[in-house]
Image (cartoon, rainbow, N blue to C red; front, side, top):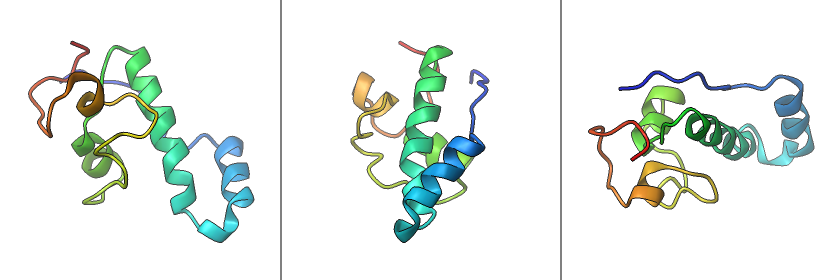
Length: 91
């Protein structure tokens, strides 16, 4: 495993986004948070897995759209791997 530093909550930026999408609740904030953290990890040479996002970061059993990873880099979409924790660095 390779340690990385990720920004879970970006303060004013995230607060403003949450207020702008108030009707969708806190879950509306999750997508930009995931995208930001995926890019931060990639900048540090690491691709996150679905397990990283769901369990290690958000402490939930499931993160919506993680199978396709949307428009952000993840190990499943870039390396064509299924859920696994064997490789943590960019291949």
